Length: 163
Figure (cartoon, rainbow, N blue to C red):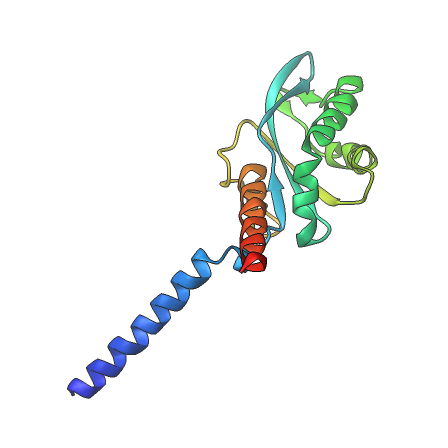
């Protein structure tokens, strides 16, 4: 019986140390599929309202490229919505079709087709808690986390090359 407990304890300890190793290894990080933008005040009807945009990347590895070009993305959104604000019907914000209107200008602004779909949520959504209804398996992160983990991976690679 003690042999069974010993083997169980050893197998559990090995699994825990393996999990800790993956957690500490910056090269084991998997990029998210979606980038949640910081909520923006955008023109809606005759006023401005906070709106949260979630950008779906064409490929996982392109989320870093999206984050590096986030000022261009924000400018493109504001340019399009300043010309034609998001409509309001019966005190409700109508976001249908807005994603299609801003998708091409965003991709043109960043110079590449990085974004394949945009999800729009009226109001300010806490970072990392946005829900993409059509894709429950989506991994969502903000640019702060994406760029921070990129920097950690670069430092780890540099340290590995120095040794």
